[in-house]
Length: 83
Image (cartoon, rainbow, N blue to C red; front, side, top):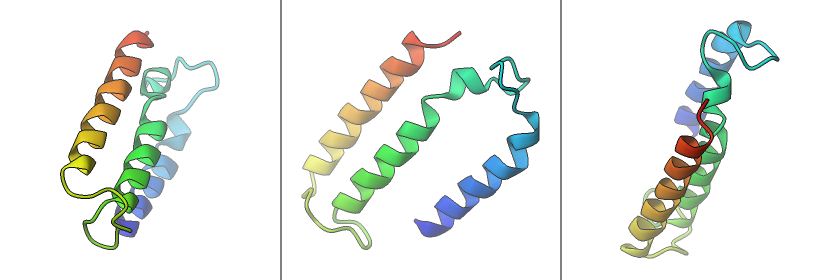
């Protein structure tokens, strides 16, 4: 997981020059504002699960349900707030 986190941070650093504060950048940063909460939430859910170095607080089965509900909520947010 930490390698994935490093890859995401490197991607943000590489794409940062295209960012404009007005939200009208060529990459559509305003439309992607759901991405950071999604990645943080998935990281937290993964940490609580049983896979890899997870704590096991979310047993198998429940972790799938939590991921499904969380993903549906983020999808709804992304669709409602799209430009």
